Image (tube, rainbow, N blue to C red; front, side, top):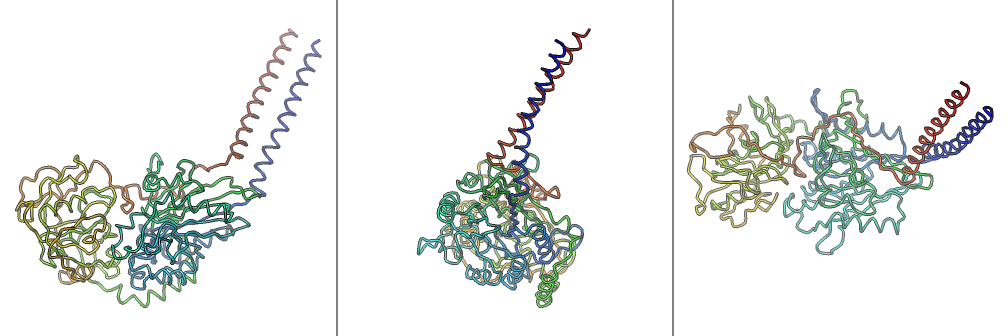
Length: 602
């Protein structure tokens, strides 16, 4: 009898082992097939390069420069030939070398890294979009812009394609180009007056259907110059891609985005999203795994913070030669010393209040046209000026746009409305102003945060009186949603703000400058004297598509998020858990039977 019990126990265990043996190989085969016979395609992405062609010197410098960036891309492509390189826009405007050559070195870099396509950023319009044809020809790539429509034809623009499709290892991969609708007011009005920027989600869904139904694409990616942010701690993604509903667009497999100069890598509503910081400091990656039948199994977003490897990277020889040729031609211009400062002239668009450099620049243009108030936008100033000599090359970096100085007359009421637009504006940041002292209350709703305004001499600004104001053409025509309508005696000097600032620095060398914060929370007790230089303590952090937040600096060598898996992969995981449970049951039964047998022997 005892032997019979033991035999039955062994028979049961062997039966369960056979069942498990059948289950395990099936799971193993499915997973093995995905790894050994499936396909892996990698998409590398840049965004907001802004003509950052030169390597930043020193340990703190993060810009790789064009030669090392190309070397890094080529290294990736050597590791996986099934690699596609794309850009999410804002490629050209931003440095002296790029600005003075209208982006020619950037196109040379794109050609060397074999860029397939680029979204159209708002700054692609800065020199006139007629440059687009030459950029594409020299760089051997295509712009994609599905939601930019020519108002005269009501059709997508002719200088870009709505989408491109490329075939890699038998897989058709499509990229739909999308541009932020903010371009309409973040670009000089005359540069975009002929274009309409359509809803990004509706446009993405419309073209995704066409691409899948008619072109039979296997993978559809939204290549979008549309902003996103990611919380450093919670990893929650926010911003324009959420607000517009782009992350919920049907027919889209993943989003590569730009515009907000952030590091973003994660998944929202099963949609992989990636953005690679700015200036070529990082490379975005989408790793796409497919079956032999070209079914998407998973898409994993990641950001490689390649600036951490800058010192060890070797420059690509061809690209290095190209850079040196451009540099030698421009060096006499860029290396000219135009001034010197004994203090750091800081400008951080994520900080509260007027910046040191923002105050200086607004004050310079104010004095240049003999106005009472100076107003510029924080987004028009792209960097800080460190202590020491100031070169012409640096001036192109901090003031890359050819905005001209404009003088006008506003009433006190109009001035208050204009300044209110730049008091902790979540879309475009803070106003940069001088010649005034402004009492603000951040607990009030946006647009109504200014209590009183005083001129530099302590005179209170009256709503019905008139005051002279200096600003730039971009703002005077509605840029960044500043409303100067109703202004009188408007006169455009047609002199670039950069030239005005350079002339001032040359005439005041070394710079003798004391900063006082013109925006003050609460009541100003002594309107005729300088106020504290401390910035207002805003209750909410400005988070615009053009304003970097405090989370913009990446914190790890590579940021990766969970893979988006398809139902087959999820089924495999379920099978594994069933097998584990069966093993536990078998082990439990075996232990029970053995213990029972021992008890009977006793």
